[in-house]
Length: 304
Image (cartoon, rainbow, N blue to C red; front, top):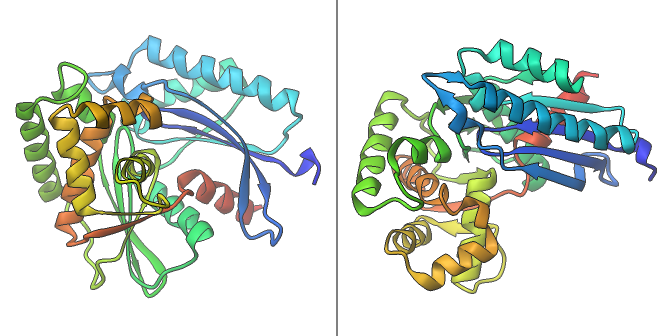
């Protein structure tokens, strides 16, 4: 299939900015990633008093200018760009979007937490197929989305305005949380889940999407020497958290090998995941390689 069939998606997240190029699968019901470029921009770190600094805006703009050159070189005409929590939570969001478009020529759509959950659900279904009832969990750098599915249909999303990077920035002084910082994060997450009640289902079937959860699957696979990274359990996640907390040297070496860029944010992300799963009485997690980007592209192409 020629390059004319490639479609691009730029995802401006709180931790990373990513460009993926996709080609339709043979049955034209899904997408295959053929190019993936990402920059660990850490945009959530540039939010000061809920306003993104000029340095943060410039970092986002420069990254999209670089991605625009790739798109132009490959003659990709169909490319969609969207932003999630880091810009959504900024009081100067419209200024950021205007600056990015002016600098890069790329128009960026700001998606809500509800839409983010819906797109994650769509992306998961493209990967693993539809399911009858349960939850889709997505832990980003600046927000966490928990989506309820009933009778095979999307129902609603609870969007919590904290994620792995924002919690690290708020509570952690060094690289990995201390025991006391761990307790503070855990207590705060429990409080958040009371303030932002999760939608409840009769089923305790849970699915995970996004970089934090995929990293959990990869780490559990490597450390526990098991086949496949598509399944994990609450017990495995708690064990991984303890390894981080105790600075277990062999486990940290594995992290540096598997996902070094997430060394500082992985434990805060796993604290969120543990508490969400416990709240929902979910003890097993199926992990999808798809997520919000694939769902966003699928939804855009449906609109055409």
